[in-house]
Structures are given as structure tokens and as C-alpha cells.
Length: 219
Image (cartoon, rainbow, N blue to C red; front, top):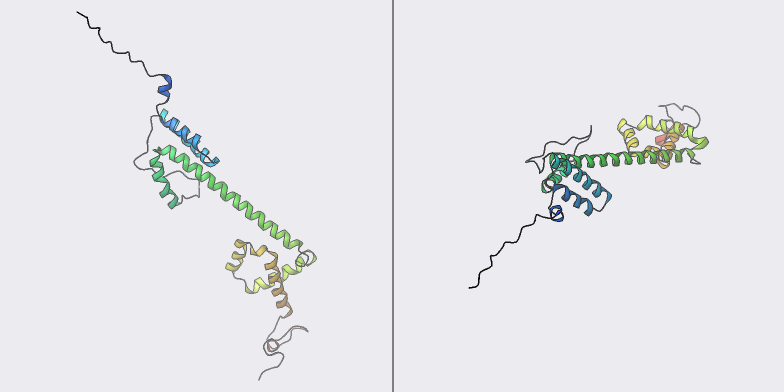
């Protein structure tokens, strides 16, 4: 009689280091995002997430909260409501903790601050260039500068409201040669045509009757 050879079950080997390393972790997933990121901004954001993920995993804090609390912002800065409404679902989808989301918000606010400062510096540089152009203009500036500035003051003192002056400053129009030339021309004409009711101030200056009726006094 043929004896049956007992079937021995194959020994189960413990998973290899390679197999263990292939198991997904929060840190590994974040590192994949770093590798997949393209632009410098995306790489920086992905690195922030990766670092926060490592810290959160070490502290046992993983996963998105039920609701994110208010984020810490630099003094004087507010988060755009529309942007945050779009960002929060993405934070949830990425399963970011409060700390991870805060790091991304901090990265965004720092980038926004840098952008605003750069734009302000560029705007100031542009206005400085306009001022220098006006000062060196052969007709408006040079030896004519002080006289033209005096004419501009005459015009502004007579007609400009505080709101108008503010608009000139904000828009930069008050530094542009073409605008200043017009203001100076008006102010100069006003000085030449200074009037006093019923009286000719001096030769070359016109009375009300001369301005309105061409020199003929109306009854």
C-alpha cells in the first residue's frame, strides 16, 4: 500500500523590507506630491504638506478635523472669503490636519504679502520716474519748473477739492508731465486774466465786462 506523503504547508515568510516600504503612509503620500509638483510654488506647498504630515504622524495627529477652526493670519490681513470657500473642501479631500492646513494658509499669505510689497515698490518707482521726467522736461521743467509749479498752485487753490487732490495722488496723474503742463497753462491764464468787478487791476488784465462782452459795457 502506498503511503500518502503528508502535505506540508509552505512557510509564510515575513514581508520584505521592500514590501513594507511600499505600504502607503501619510509621509510617503506627501513626498509623492512633492515629486509630482511642477512649479516652484507647487513644490514649496507640497514640501510644507510633507513636513507637516511627518510631524502630524509622529504626534499621532492624522486626518482632517470635522471642521477647521480660524486660521492665524498676519496683522491687518484678511482671507478672501471666496478663496477660502474653495480651499476648505480641498483641505478635506487631502485629509489635511488643522496644522497642515495652517501651514498652507501661511504660505499663501506670505506669498500675497510679498506680491503686494513688490507692486507697491514698483508703483513708487514709476511715480519717481514720472517726477524726474517732469523736472527735466525742456518746456515744463528746468528753469521753468518753479514758475510752472506756482501756476499749478494757482489753479489747484482755485478749483481743486480735497477729493480731486487725493485722486491725483492715488492715480499718479499729479506726477505726469502732460497733466502738469495743462494745470500750469490754466493757472498761468488765470494769473494773466485776474479780474476785479468793475475795475481793471492793471494793464493786460481784464474786467468782468471785457471777459463776457468783449470790452463793451452793457446797459
